[in-house]
Length: 88
Image (cartoon, rainbow, N blue to C red; front, side, top):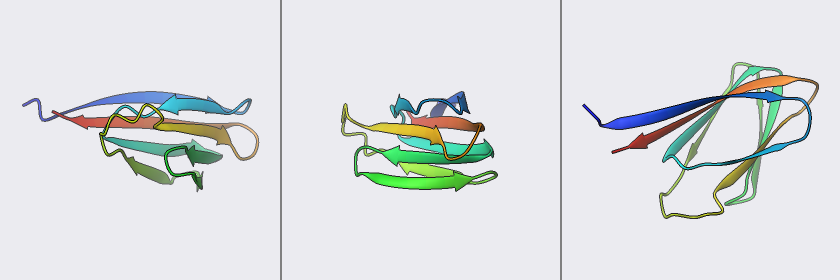
């Protein structure tokens, strides 16, 4: 069944913040190592997540070209996983 599809990206953080477009309906950011700062541009929300925590971001699917997040390490090197899930 083709009810959903997904993407997975590994984020190696420690230098400059990285901007990512969120194209999927639901995005999950999981902190594998360290502490991560996530800024959601659509509403200005800033969240911090620690090792072992997950942040869920739901996208309305309205086609906003500005649906971006900026992801960075809060201290030292961090590793995160960005999972995108889209329904068909």
